Amino acid sequence: MRKKGIQLSPKATPTRTQNMVASPHTDNRFEGQILYDERPDGSKMPILDMDGQTIRRGNVSAGGLAEIESNLRAVRSGEIDLKQMTGDRNG
Image 1 (tube, rainbow, N blue to C red):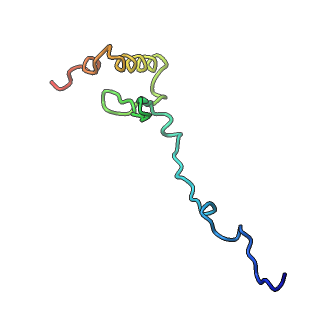
Image 2: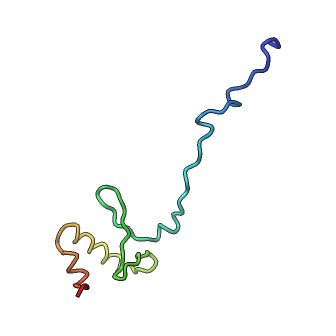
Image 3: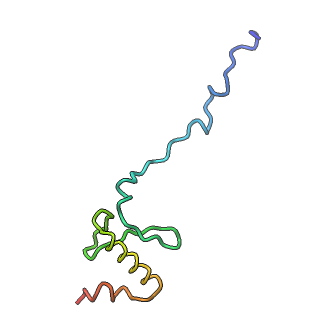
């Protein structure tokens, strides 16, 4: 056995699996509070108020959240047009 020289165990040699870099972590505590509209293709769009600011879950009451969800369902089904909801703000 001594004539074989120094032998390295397989764990001592670098491999692709041992050099994996961890994926970047996103802070879900911040993004979890933003209300999103989930699209059919899987993408998410934040729900905005009339001023263009994102709506956060802590700022909306239960009745307000139900109203937002019912408006989203109505827009998706084509019952109401977005211009009816926003009004004519361009003059």
